[in-house]
Structure formats: structure tokens, C-alpha cells
Amino acid sequence: MKLLLTSGGVSNATIENALVGLLGKPIAESNALCVPAAAYGSLDPVGMAYRFITGATPTSRLANLGWKSLGVLELTALPTMKEAIWAPKVRETDALLVWGGDVMYLCYWMRESGLADLLPSLPDTVWVGVSSGSMVLTPDFGEPYDDWFCREPTTVPESDLPAADARALGLVDFSVFPHVDNPRAPENSMANAERWASGRSAPTYAIDDATAIQVVDGTVAVVSEGHWKLLTP
Amino acid sequence: MKLLLTSAGIKNPSIENALVQLLGKPIADCDALCIPTALYGHPYAGPRQAWKCISGNETGTPTVGLGWKSMGVLELTALPSLDEERWVPLVKEIDVLLVEGGDAAYLCHWMRESGLADLLPSLEAVWVGVSGGSMVMTPRIGDDFVSWQSPAGDTTLGVVDFSIFPHLDHPDLPHNTMAAAERWAADISGPAYAIDDETAIQVVDGAAEVVSEGNWKKLA
Image (cartoon, rainbow over the protein chains, first blue to last red):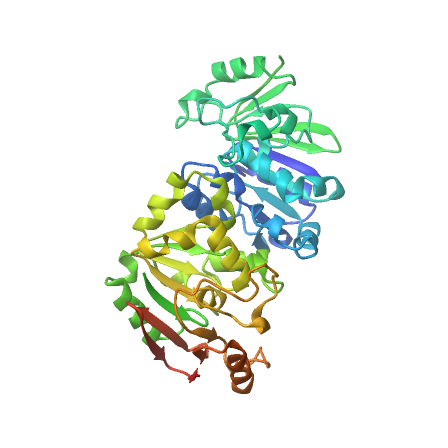
């Protein structure tokens, strides 16, 4: 699997070029599936999912890039769908577009749905993450942060869950702190990123909404028209 | 709750007029939620079809694209893992629920699991069903229409006291003939309607009324 881990979507030409490079063909010739699950853990579950799926996200481009086709991969539905119906659709798609919201909620459903187990068998698929959709692949997204960064799925008893970091998917060996210095998220200052990174076991990329991290065959490259910092614990 | 049970959505002016009457105000003044869940249970539907419906690009079954004031996705499979305060107040205030088709048995399962089935009696919203989204409100859908297996079999919510055979005489569905509908109705052993894609059944205070620019039949 090839990764493009963004903070604010495909927000500039440099990130878009990186995406086309990973796809190996134009976006208009590529099929994509939208994964809205993290949005359901947000404060506005129905609105955020709708805006993502329909591309009504002018400042955070992803579903609205002009894909050849789009579908909705609903992680919460997968456990009650026949795997023979949904798994081939995932294997056939060129890209998985994974929206943000609540990283704990997304991580829980990545495992519960079976999609996490399928990822290693998808060498050519491009995972395009936004915010929590990027963080979910890291080894360590910490404990709930200002009641905003992440939250437990509410109906699962706390005692049944392993510690957060034991649940993280760990497909990459670094953490991601998104939305650095976003004016609408004052808690995402670089100073807070440094504090947060100091508690992580792995190095942290603190990235703003004009930055993405591309990972191909384990090789990490930062793609940016903005600013970012690699923070080591 | 007022119901507009369609076979294929708001297909003609008669059905649209009925919808506006049920809403009591123009479509452009109404807040709507779409429920795509049934699509995930049907072998012929799935991810692509869900995107077409949610984005209003499914012109064969017009619902989401009618020009609503606001729109959101109420995904029933996600609701059990959400705080009720995130969705219950919203549903109580919404003007209309647009319930896409697919597998009625799958939808019924998630109507109950999500808690939405229990909320229905307290809702002001108009329920606009498409195909499986209409059939889920009936007492039984008949074995012919069950593809997703559940312990409930072909038993559905029973909000209305009649069953529905949709897509009558649809050119792409050669089995959906009136003769097949009559055989199906005999097995159901209750009141039933066979309706084509130009027909809907509106239900207000328990009174059912057919709205149609096409063909339909009440089957005993």
C-alpha cells in the first residue's frame, strides 16, 4: 500500500502531483472509495460525512478532485456484509479516501470491519488520509487530547479495550500531529505539537494543512507548500 | 409519522405534489437526512450505488437531488457506536427521512439495532421510502425479496398493515410481473399492493392512499 498522509486534504498542486505520481495515472482515470467512518465520531456526524462524500469540502479537497468513479466504503456496515461482496471492491479500487474526525473511532472500526487485516494485501492501492485518516496508520496517537483529538467509541466498555497505543494500526513508524497553526484550531500550535510529540514513543511529523507525508515501500518523503517539523521524543 | 412509500422515488409531479402536501412546506424549506443503509445489504447495490444515491446522482430514483434546504447522512450501522445525543435530537427535528432501497431485511435489522425503529412513533418527519426503504415499513416482505438472512426472516417493522411489491413491470426486472405479484401476495396472506415505479402509497394517520401516474393493483 502506498500512503499519502495529509492534514487538510489535497490542498495544493504539490500534493496533487504527489497523488498522481502514487496512482501512476491521472485522477480522472482512477477509481476511489470514500471511507467516512471517522466523521461519525465527530461532533457533526451526519453533516461531516455528507460533505465529505459529496465533495462539498472546498478547503479540504479529496472526493472533489475529479475521480473516474467514487463509492462509499462504510466500515460500520462491513461486519454485516458478506466479505465476498465488499473485499473485491476494495481490491479493485485505485485509492481509499479516508476522511478525518475521531481517530479512536476510526481505528476501532478499521479493526472491527476487517479492513485493517486486508491492507497488507493491497500493494498498489493508494491510501489518502486526511487528519485522523492519516493518524490512524501511525503506531501511537496518544490519549484523548482536549476531548477533541480522539475519543473512545461510546458503547464499548472501557475495560474491553486495550490501551490506545496497543490498538493503533502502526503501518508507519512515525506519529502525525495535523493542522499545525490552523487558525480555526488554536490548540494545534507548534508548541502544543512539541509537547504532544514528547510523550510519543516514535518520532512525530507536525504538519500544517499545506503539507503531506508520502510513504512508498517504507520510504518517507514530505510534500509541502507550507510548514512542518520532524519532532523526536 | 407520515409516510410516502414509493417504488422508485419522486418520479413524477403527482408524487412530488403528494410529498409537498405531506411536508406542509416547499422542498427548498425542508431539512433532510438520507439513510443509505439498505444498499449495503443488497448484492446488486454496494459502495458505488451508495455514492450515487448520497450525492444525488441516482436519477433513476430521485430523492436526495430534489433541492432540499439541507442534507446529511444518517448511517444506521454507525448509530449504535455513537452517543444518542449526537443523532437523536437531530432526527426529532428533521423534516424528512429519505430511505434508499436495497435489502429490506438488512435495513430492518439496522432499524432495530440502531434504535431508530423505537423512535418512529415520536417523529414529526415524513418517511420517504424507495423500494426496500418502503417495504421495511410493512409487516412482511415475502421470501422472494429476502437475500440478507436474519433471524427475523421476512418479517419487517409492520408500521403499516399492508405489504408492497415494488417495480411492477420494470423492463430490467423480468420477474416483477403482475402474475408474480399475485403469487407473492397469496403467500403473504395479508393485504398488499403491487406498484410500478410511477406509483406511491401515502399513509397519514393510518389511512393509505395511492398516488400514481402509472400502474398498480391492490391484492387481497
